Length: 232
Image (cartoon, rainbow, N blue to C red; front, top):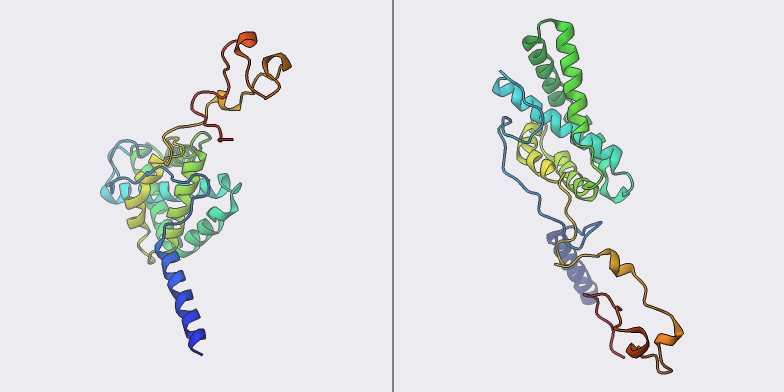
C-alpha cells in the first residue's frame, strides 16, 4: 500500500512538472517570441484603418481581425493537426458567437454610416472583410503564424463569454508580428545551401587510408565551413 501511495505521489509530481513546463514546439526547438503590446485599435500595422470610427467601432474591428486570423489558421495550418487550429476555431466561434455577431453588426453600421449609400456601405464592408482575411495569408512565415494562432486560439477558448474583445486586444499584435518569418532561435547558425554539398569522390583524390591527397586535388573543400566531423 505504501508503494502504491508512493507511485501516485511520483506520478502526481510528474504531472505537475509537465503542466508547469512550456509546450513543446512543433517546428523549432525554440521559436521566436512574437509577443506585443496591448492595442487600442488605431495603431499602425493592425490592418485597415477606419477613418472617423468610434472607440466601439475600432474595438469591433480588432475582434473581427482576430476572428479572421483564427479562421485563416484553421484553413492554412491543417498540415500539422497537433496545432488544433480547426477545433480551436470552431470552439471560439461557438462560445463567443454573441460577441462576434455584435462586432460584425457594429462594423456594418460603421460602413453604412461613412458610405454615401447603403449599397456602397455593403461593398466597403465586403472589401474590409476580404482584405482583413487576405492580410493573414502567409507562406514564408507559415510556421510562426500557425504556432502563434494555435496558442491564441486555445487561450481564446477558455476566456469567459463576453471577454473575447479582451484577448483580441491583448494578442492581436502578437498575431501580426508572427507574419514576419523567423527560424530556429536556439542555435545561432543556420543551414546554408553548401551544407547539402557532397565531397569529391574521385578515387585519385584519396589514398588507401582514406585521407585526402592535396597534391593531386588541391585543398579539400569538405566539410563546408561550420560543419564539425566526428572524431575517429
